[in-house]
Image 1: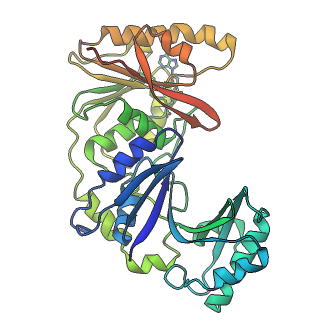
Image 2: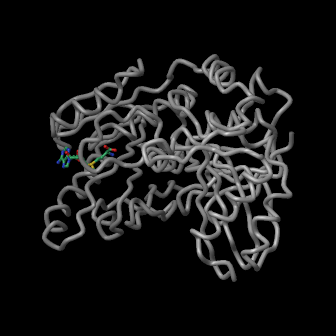
Image 3: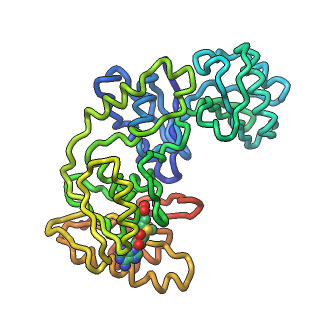
Length: 380
Ligand SMILES: C[S@@+](CC[C@H](N)C(=O)[O-])C[C@H]1O[C@@H](n2cnc3c(N)ncnc32)[C@H](O)[C@@H]1O
């Protein structure tokens, strides 16, 4: 069954997601499947594949926010026609009869603009075609329902199945978020932007609850980001056509021992305790220490410093943060030649305070704040 998919992601990281999709190895389960027609779009990447490609994408992608499977696209300008169009589509390959389902609609520059009315008409069209009566879904049961996404854009209606369920960055390891954690997908994007080769030592001297360290260990060991979670396809008819468990097992057979040493430190003992808690489901050999930045220990070989310092945001906070960013630059200068610094911050002027020549690898949005990943300029 050919599926047309859209993996959405945080703005600015589409090029990294495109590469991640192109490099999604299929292994033994799914060796005949592969992502085809991979094309970057605004806010995500489109690609085609079959059910196994979809399952590998769900388990193996670390940069995607959601994975939508396109069911139908058609023009419609009258609400009265929407349910009859929907009723002409074949739904049994997508949905289970009498199983709970939820519909989320949005509209842009279209004559049909009332999202509640669109949702109701699409639901009517499906139940008429399926000849069923799915139970109403309570707010706390949404995860057990098949989720459809309806988008009206310039009078074109696109209906998709949300194969992800909870956003894909929720990998399930974050038991203790500590303060100001970086989202898992953004941490992974920052690591990819840093061009860390997954062999040289990596250090995060302001590690907080350890997101960059854990994502780095996942990259270095080929650990499948989605291994510990469930997905939105499970309550749908697509789940009958593919075994997510088989794909998870297959991807785990390709986990490798980490070649790189990974170090994390933070002056706050609670942050290190949170990192340990978040690491508890893994046996990654990450070395941790409670230490201020000025006392962070560096291995005597070229290394990658990748970190997410506090961003501040108020002038008073900036005055306090200027010395911190200068100290990050000092740490970089203490490191062996050939080392590199990558940091994520919302304030360009703070990145300048490091005194290290850097460029923005991407600009994205973290919970409503614009943030850049700054990477050190490679020496010519
Ligand atoms: C934005 S948080 C890092 C969040 C982390 N990336 C995560 O995902 O959890 C910044 C961290 O820097 C630490 N920090 C601030 N100043 C420090 C210093 N001078 N030395 C060591 N750690 C410091 C704070 O304790 C805090 O945990």
